[in-house]
Image (tube, one colour):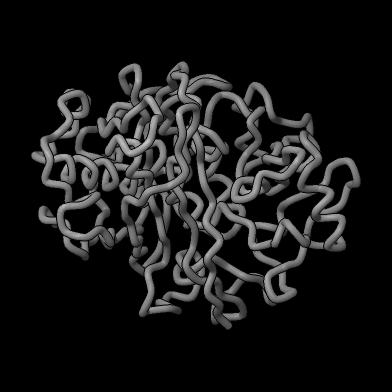
Amino acid sequence: MSTPIRTMVSIVVAAAAAALLGAPGYAHAQASIVINVLDAPGKGFNDPGAADPASAAGGNAGATLGDQRFIAFEYAADKWADLLDSSQAIVVGAAFRSLSCDATSASLGEGGTNTAHRDFTGAPVVNTWYPAALANALAGTDLAPYSDDIDAFFNSAIDDASCAFPRVWYYGLDANPPAGTVDFVSVVLHELGHGLGFQSFVDLGSGAKLNNFDDIFTLWLEDHMAVELFSGMTDAARVAASVKTGNLHWVGPDVVVRSGELTSGRHPSGHVEMHAPAPQNPGSSVSHFSTSVSPDVVMKPSLTGATHDVRLAAALLQDIGWSGSPPAPAATAGSATHAPSAGGGGGGGCFIAAMTGSHNNAD
């Protein structure tokens, strides 16, 4: 059984800059990611404008602005592909679009799965929705061959001066954006994470499950105060749990093991706090780690500084059913080592299978 999904999860940033963190090394796995450029000619990933010199200094050798955007996206996709196993190409429809933006904050990107699937051959849990890329990996076949698996959109207003937001995109690969810029690789990593499965399908306005079935993400959410899992609650209880700041926890075993590297946002049990602000933040609540989680990680609801650290998010993806190579541990608890690779993917191998669409420098 399959159904279309159009719930996009967003990440925002404030105008002020913040401190930066590095990224860990990565191990190889066996996934491939196809980037399907949805931009019109001359726009977004096809922009023929002059390359950004600061991004070039940060390791991005693209000849045009569109090239630099594509190379940065490819670099982020490599990082995820290095960690995941799938015999099926993961197809991402990507474009720049005008998203919300004003003088003090901007929505940087939106991303999520295009379809959800349940009770397919190879599904580990019956009567449970899985995002397309994961369902395809588990089934060993493309369950929705005529649609992209993931959509990922990025705010064009940040670069084109169409809003008063004072920061611009940085397309460097070194997680070291200059003052007044926003690290694009961090945002791509974030939106791809949502599309790979870091996303609840529960309607948080009503608390209702998608077509009255669980989704695999929701099975690992707990209202710690009530000692009750999201999946077993009433609709009203799910709504209430979504605004219990500090008490909505992720309880999956891989995250619990990984959580020892955190210095905050972690319960003594190893559970990790999820984003549950009061009032709800539509498009953000539940489907992110809490803002209290530290050190900084990719799947928090707002960008406070560049981070390419996907270790905790990768553990969550393993909890929902992804197989692959776990990221290398931090050198010490609560720290992250910095090991960027200008070639992409940290481990040296490029797992981008192909590129479709109109980008003029396709591999």
